[in-house]
Image 1 (tube, rainbow, N blue to C red):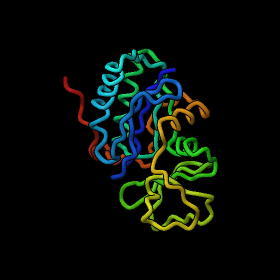
Image 2 (image 1 turned 90 degrees about the vertical axis):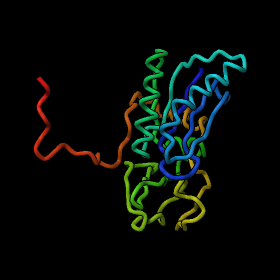
Image 3 (image 1 turned 180 degrees about the vertical axis):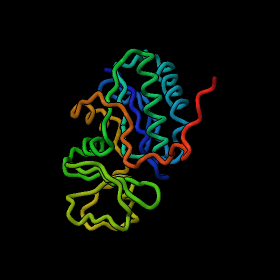
Length: 209
């Protein structure tokens, strides 16, 4: 089972995003990207990985495309999922989406970890083992009742009132394992925040004649 894997959720300056090519459980090639500003590099990175595998004498035709759908960077999720959808359509293969928290828990093989990731405006995205994903100001987040936290917000600088695991983001194998465990055909970005773009107060302009 050959798989293309995307994670475009990372929003901070840490090396959290990735593009990878897998054959079963073997990582044939991958590139890790920083969170902020990664979106413009997804397409050339994937192309470079495909060339790398080809030059190694392997034929890579994906059987599926798996990607993190969120929560995370608005631009990163849109770019990675749009690219993933395009490649899947071109190759005629299915897509699987998984949340960042589920992929992190699969990477760690722990079901009790809450994923806490960096969001804009001094906030966290929180993806708990049970319940819905939400955003919260950093100063308002109380982790004292949680079993454990991990993610790119758990950077060794901030202090937490619960155990921590030093894992900034899921691995490619963790993303695939989570997608297989929580199999879903949903492949739309998981946006926690409402869109900032709003229609004009006077309404949209009429269509040109």
